[in-house]
Image 1 (cartoon, rainbow, N blue to C red):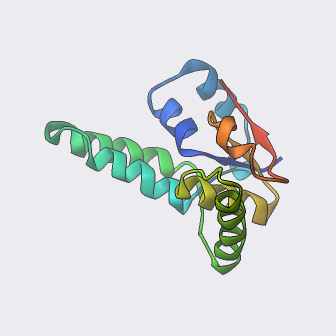
Image 2: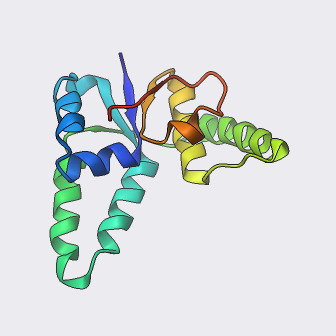
Length: 133
């Protein structure tokens, strides 16, 4: 089964959350992906660390993302995102736009999104979810 890891799952791994690390370790490397959106969020987080820790955090993120396949955000993802976001806005139940982009990538490729944020992601029809916590 192919899995798309949400940013919060990656942060759990980077922080050494045992249960999440074990679940990731049990997956085949060819079956685990992150969106380029998650890559952006992880590096942004590293760049927001206290100035004395930024280089260390960037290096940690670089090592981590090098172990995963990074999926681009393409035109089809953009169209799926637009449909998802418009639907959520029309219902008055919006979620963060980066979550919409990650969900759209999962839907486009028919991958399970692994997230700790099932509260928001479950509002998206047809999206398969796992919570490793």
